[in-house]
Amino acid sequence: MAGKLRSKWIGPFVVTNVFHYGAVEIKSAGTDKVFKVNGQRLKLFHENLMPEEEIVEELPLEEPSYTPAATP
Image (cartoon, rainbow, N blue to C red; front, top):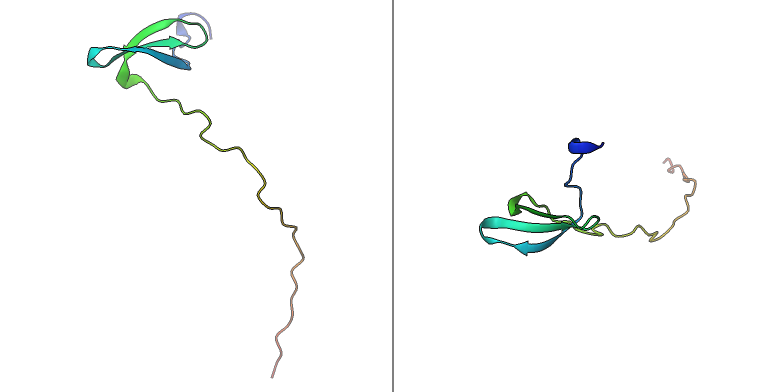
């Protein structure tokens, strides 16, 4: 998407200054553009929340065995 319809709010952004009444100055990490925004509109970015997947233990599958019950 090009032009004025493209969102300029695709991050990540770095908070550079916090002003009175909830205003926050943020800087784009990719383009170094600076914006002054309402702090309530910001969302936290949590890097690497999900741990990396690892194999804990590998168990081979076996065929089930069935022993009939003794009849009296």
